Image (tube, rainbow, N blue to C red; front, side):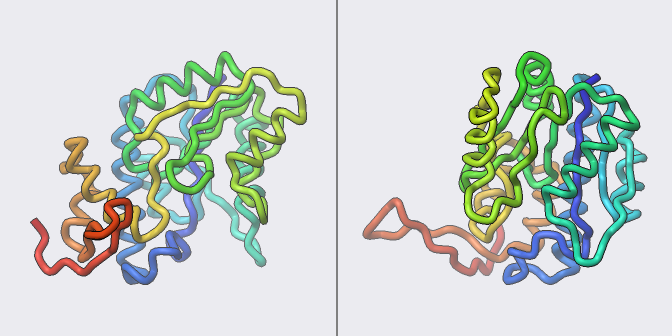
Length: 245
């Protein structure tokens, strides 16, 4: 049985790196918009027996249940658990409660990911021990699959090494041979820093995703744009934009 697992951070802490762009209330609205868009994509995905959303917020869990996803409430601790500990918790629930034979983790800020991406990954994880989709900018991981779910630990919280490098290194040290790198721009692009927001607004237009809640939010709230450096066309500056077209 293959399960898709989606951990969602508490809305009060979501996307803290973007606090110089939006207020806390706006960041909450952005998170909800991204999550609503993800639920609409997952309604079209058939490759997983269960799709589980793991979050502390009732609002997110209610949206999940309304869209045929299984919501599980995260119990917060003090001090907060590391992200790897959260991944371990929901992975354990998937194995113990749902008898998961494979688990795939995805995240709501991979805003360009498509139903086809999810279906392709669901096929790959049944044939391989590890499936990872590299994040476009950070050396991190945007999608992470394991078969079986406890074949190795996750490395999202490594203090020094990007998660993609740490994961592949560990997998090879363990002697795992069936390691699949899922190479996809759409599945690998995520929203993490200010530049990503500006690029997201443009990419959503390029991929004809202007009907999405995320696009509508950015159209109404994002007041930034990218401007190419005249002397070096590989460099961009983020500048204020007074009019949104």
